[in-house]
Length: 285
Image (cartoon, rainbow, N blue to C red; front, side, top):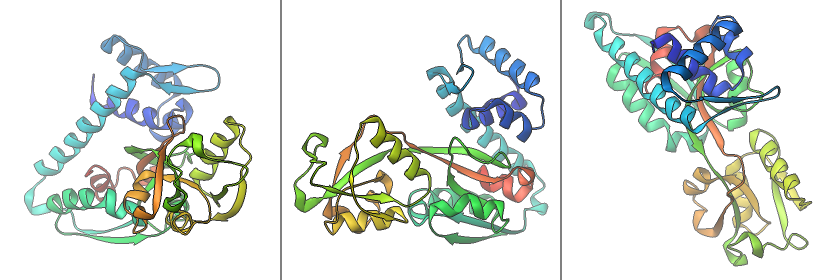
């Protein structure tokens, strides 16, 4: 196993698309397939389940992805440390993330990065997480923390950060604390107006044959939490948003075991993946 093979596997483990990974890392699809087959032989396990429509990680693949995360990050940090101390990185990097991510993931990222590269200035912008991908494509920022979706643009490169579960929330005053207690004929629902959660929530409702009474469509998970806390209905949001909300004591959380989680990544334009400033920031988490 070499670092290039590990990089190819790592990208594929997040893109779950052979064509996108081959394009992003400048290899042919056949070369990528051979690399994955060789890794599977070395590991003695299948890393992906493949059919004509989808690619999924196996349990062994998830373990290797975690190993690749740690190994590639450590390798990047070591290369930075081995650089000439008199030629430290300098300049500025524009970073975008949601308000919630600024609490949950940004401190670790910035602490690690500033320790290694004290001469680099970070220009941080926060906002609706749905804006992250477009800001990268518009070249308004260099790096963003974003939700990696099945239709994630091929022009973007990303490194897996975390999986974040979604939960159902109900007003604390409603006393509804279990999914079985939800009366879909009476309770209204606050739905996401756009973004990755819109697809996930609508898919979950459809799978369960639920046609909710809609109170309204709202932009931003924090706004959904606030409206549920006010008694406007129930909602489905990432648990990390509830944990960091000032209204967390005014809502009940219901675990949904069969709903898709958010896959968080730290992202940049593929053409910027080799930029020393961008590469170092993305490897810092």
